[in-house]
Length: 397
Image (cartoon, rainbow, N blue to C red):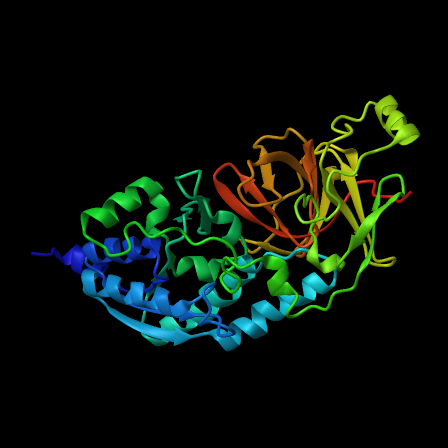
């Protein structure tokens, strides 16, 4: 029999069921805690959804099967129009401007924790929950909700959630953020979930496993131009700057072009690490004014390294920006300039509601405009912004 306290804590919680194992275990754990759980399957993409690359129909079948095993209701909700207006349109604008956006971050802020949250509230929900590997903690001293890294460092997804605000976090639960992935799989297998061994989804939902350039070519016209190295030598032709990103190594179409004669001797004399005769090429700069793709040879070429960056369109979890810090200050700040990157020690050299500048102790590799720089203080995610530029010396020939 439930106690009065347990009954008082029972809530109506709407769970975003994606068809994957993480959201499935999320729903199960909440049901086991005695909550009234309702599943919502979000359809966010309709174009060519019947293709082999990105079929929400299969995911919905899996989500419905999970709901049946757990014993909860599930509703199919179409957010495709919202997604196209709020996420995909911005995705295309960024690529056309020569930047490399992260639509999953915008999807979380605009769809999963806005359109979905609003829908859940209309259903009378007190909370929503998703299968993200992150945590929310109420700081008793400040009264603010903090966004924390998931306990499994290999699966932490706080990077993708850094734009969530206090109102959103106050209504959100991340049950699997307290677990490691191996434990989530074990629970799913133990209770007989049909998707217990389902492969984790990868990539952007509306692109799926198809070749990225093939997908982008359907929406952005090709605009060929020259590929040049750091000495100004023409190495080949690119198909359009939108189809490349900084640090890219594959798909450049220039193979193992070698530095020759005096050029090779000059490089060796400068002692540039990684500039050997057969070193791979990396995209280092995209010059929209001249439609030139600049590439360099060697992973550690100076053009690929940055000790400073500026970010715009910042969003701070606390609702206000953190204070400016000095390098090596206590407590130490860290930042990620891309997902699955270890926190890099940094100083917050300048900050406002919408802008920040970060200085790093160690140079960061291929800092990419359009990606997000996300700031941390230990396990607490403070927020971040969209990378606008860095201090790489990308001058031409």
